[in-house]
Amino acid sequence: EPEVTQTPSHQVTQMGQEVILRCVPISNHLYFYWYRQILGQKVEFLVSFYNNEISEKSEIFDDQFSVERPDGSNFTLKIRSTKLEDSAMYFCASSRNVGPQETQYFGPGTRLLVL
Amino acid sequence: AQRVTQPEKLLSVFKGAPVELKCNYSYSGSPELFWYVQYSRQRLQLLLRHISRESIKGFTADLNKGETSFHLKKPFAQEEDSAMYYCAPGVVMDSNYQLIWGAGTKLIIKP
Image (cartoon, rainbow over the protein chains, first blue to last red):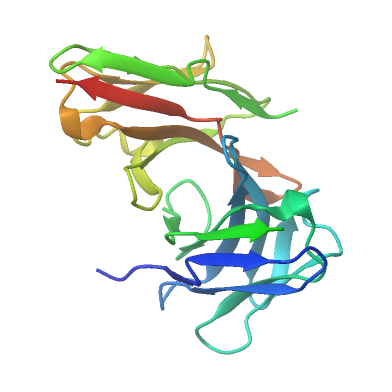
């Protein structure tokens, strides 16, 4: 069964550095998402992406964040200048379509630690 | 504001006992409701959705519009049910559909 994959599984970075988190969604899916979960807190929506553009973003997704689908398979989340509070688990998800009939399939997550 | 509440951070029951994980939502429209589960060291995965009226792994969830609740239930808990459970209404906001996540309930099934 196809799965969403994410790399790296863990990333440690210095405050102020740029990080790129990578995701490979399921191949016939059209909608892509990034979520984050700060340790001990709830899963938070960051952004959704469809047809090569952002379709929805949350307040968390400020100018420091960007997403890109650089080729036909990867979907990346870039944080330009990391802050301590960016430390979290970042989940990528994809779905074939959008709406209540559709399941979002999640990747295993990337644990980001900003020092 | 759209909000979903899972009042119990941790729920611990004995194997074979009934389980109920509570979820209440506040949303002006008619959300579609989902339960996601995350087993230890595994990814988030869909457990069940209201629209399908299904029972997965013995779990069911009934939407109570009057109480705005979507509690997850299982009559006889098994040890393999130990996991984090997230209630996630799907709502339309600004013409976009997205999931709103509860804080999650950690379910521990004691042998």
